[in-house]
Image 1 (cartoon, rainbow, N blue to C red):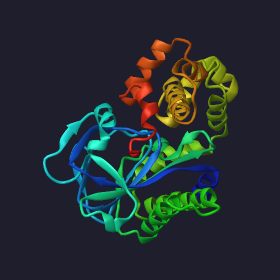
Image 2: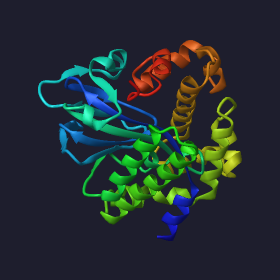
Image 3: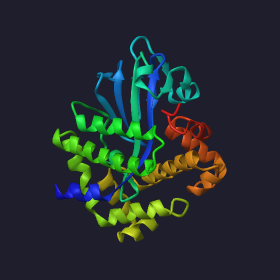
Image 4: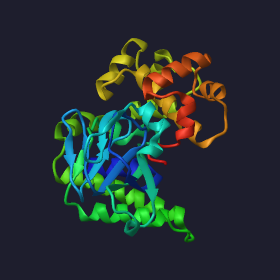
Length: 305
């Protein structure tokens, strides 16, 4: 348990958004993807997820770790099947935000999105390789989600501070829920160990601070004080992926952040995250997220309608 306490203490948590969404017509998103974690509370209706179409019942929550591609169906009946790209272009046909539950009679859900990074560099839930899962019978998490939604819609002083603190509390309760119910025991046992390796933590930190620079295996080897021939094997042994794939994900995650929060043009964003060739950056971006970089900017978030 001491190991989990250290990891929880290392987490930097950032609130992203909280919304109530009415489902105007049923829709299946073939390849939903977001870099942030999402917790979806089903108020009324039905949500299905995954290739086996596991059902989320009313009053239950679906947790989707950031970086996980998933098939999602919102609403009952015959759904309109959309790719992620298609859905983003016309999501107003399927989703409509609302503020007061009394004003809505149809199927609807609430969503809270947040970032949780270990050592301010690693997507915590994504790095543990958790699949999306249903949260059942957890009144504390439900309370926190509703509290975040209420605070998000307020104009009270200290709103940002309260959202940050409550979201941090929410993340801790999600981790406690996983541990208490012994979910993903194998994934935890396999992946939790690398959070304790200081050489790997140094690599994570160096990559984060030098996304637009030289991140060759030679450089990473010097950071970790291991041989250039061994650093790729070492990194993959502890994380399950090779360092260059991890670097590309970090670069693209930073690009998404810049697209959502800055007015930089796509060419400059590509260079900022280490791509001198804009066309190549755009191709890799669409390959990873399923949508063009420009559309990601207009989107801001999949749930932002």
